[in-house]
Length: 299
Ligand SMILES: Nc1ncnc2c1ncn2[C@@H]1O[C@H](COP(=O)(O)OP(=O)(O)O)[C@@H](O)[C@H]1O
Ligand SMILES: [Mg+2]
Image (cartoon, rainbow, N blue to C red; front, top):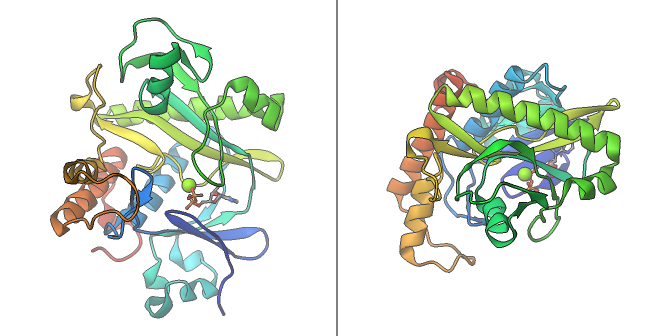
């Protein structure tokens, strides 16, 4: 028996698993400058999955989540077909069984620092998603408090930053308020926990959905793909601090003079290895857990 593929994203695949359940499989694919590179990053899918589980444990009392289990033994038997001949071992550690949710049409971003598209808007207009901010902030400045800065979920092209009022128009006042409350609290806790391990969570994107009428944390949670992690000792205002995980890839690509349009140049093996090590280190430092103890084959 094969499973029906319901969504193939840039990094993950979703399969129908009956009774309002899904199997979500994180691949080892990596994107840089919004382009998927050819070379997989060993262990990246396991890191994304293990990290999500770590945070969902820590945030369990902030909001319910879609997670049923990441234990390969709990996956439906048909899931063995997903990775072909490799069977269940081929997806162990990268797959989660989840409840299907009615997803909000929002990317629920929380920013603790002024960087990326937030910095671009502030530099131009002095605002952040339309909110006024103190004058004179530099790039990568820590915001006075973490802010809920949603964006649309574009099915094609880039997501668009919107104001809180726009989010209210999209999902209603009550839901927008609850989403803001969940996300800001989740960010606060996560940023505080990561800071103890020398890592700054500059910003992160949550995706929320309704399960049994309750707004729940879905998708991936506080992973390197959905967040900006910075080594705390390399954070400097007025700069664009290095990313804890993707920097070797970004730096190498920037040096090639690539125009950021597909096809991307092939990553050298050394860059692939270094990036894989960075992902694993990010997980191990943040969670205090060893990736070797997580499900699936250690590469
Ligand atoms: N519990 C859930 N129920 C339904 N859809 C979900 C759930 N959790 C996450 N999703 C959706 O699954 C998709 C995950 O695939 P992903 O590879 O991240 O795709 P993308 O490239 O579109 O971000 C996203 O569209 C996300 O909104
Ligand atoms: Mg996604």
